[in-house]
Length: 408
Image (spheres, helix red, strand yellow):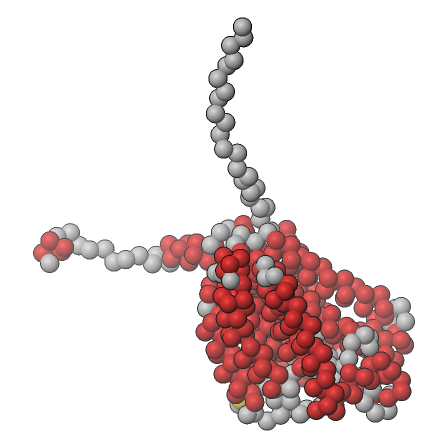
């Protein structure tokens, strides 16, 4: 008769998530590509504007780049998490700036800019960064609510915060940024785990409603929605800008006509230094260079998403995702516009087009992604950096003389 050995109790087997590898390689690649795209933008801005404006645009953009780098370094030192924690206050300040812009002098029929003492700022550009920071904080703190009451405790309250900002941007005649902010909001909800049945009604109803409204109440924008499908038929009227953009891209061929040798930029293509600067890139440097720029954008976004996946915290994941996506969406819309794939709409090429507010927003966004990558290697690094600085600078509490405590 065999005697069975008593079965030893097995320890509970739990799936332990393997620690993620720090995103330091991604950090290096991300910073490198952001720097290269920004530097390329400065070079092309000089080429597109020196004939008509001399070096003034180049100098202003260089100044904004320096401001953006300083702001980006500040964002890294403060930490993207702390900035995200402050985001509710930022949203309120942003709304005040957007209201202020509505009462400023319009530029090209739009009230998007604040003009004060020779200084011009477009608050809606900074709104992309602020809304991303706010949604990251909000969604990270409502993880359980996404499972239990997603609409009541997540979508509705976050919409109450975001909707006024989006509407103020729309009132400022900035339809492109309005669409981008709305899309970014829904995408972040989706990534956070919001069920599609809550998101799809907005995604399916709002675009057709907007098209119908534009068709019946905004003739100028309706012409933009229709002209891009046949730019040649309207090349002397409402399709003039788009037609010249296509001529620039077509005349460049594979290798381009040569740096600074563009003919279309000589007063033929309006806004050639802002929204249509990539058309001049295609003309002067050719399709190969333009394709390289597209690959650089794709690489930047892909690496940013990789940093998002490797983020140490849920809040960091949302920050890196949102910042990367808004840069990618903006690049996609700009390239789609200059190639007549999308309706003509003012949307600058990230880090390349002339415009201080957009460059500032993109550099701060890049700094926030870099902060998430650094945090994946050195958790809570801003606090450690502050403690290290305190020791180096000898920030210590004053010593109490012996016997003083007893005498008191």
